[in-house]
Image (cartoon, rainbow, N blue to C red; front, side, top):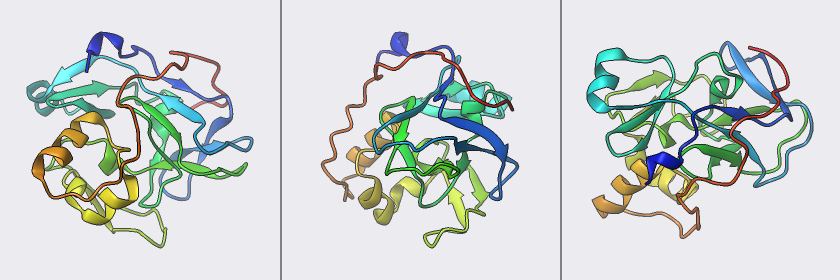
Length: 193
């Protein structure tokens, strides 16, 4: 991955806004229908290595490449998406989230945090309330065969590298490119944090 192509600012679709969430604190909600495959967010920010991540513990970060993490502004609306074990958005590439299925107006936009953290010691209690709720989400969930089958190639490239190298499979042949997509680096954001 060429990190020179990574955005420096977050972007959120104008079809989403921040509201109070029944899952946790604030979340992102669709203000209009969002089609399957539509880009909903793109993350941007400075990059840090594993040592700096361990030393600083930033409030909002995710793994973009092996040993490399993007720190996002925790107050930018794009950073306020909540986790769900049966999410309606997933990775298009290292920094872009797109709709996994059609999303109705008023529905909360959620992603599975396990698809973006490369810190195996990380964990959190899950309160998503979906039928597929795992109860606890960890940085080692990429090892779960059920998640590999459900998400195919929709993980950050760093986690795909782990999946591909461990020989455990399964994962589908979904053709996520792993390259930064052509969406605006910044844009109008509806709502406020």
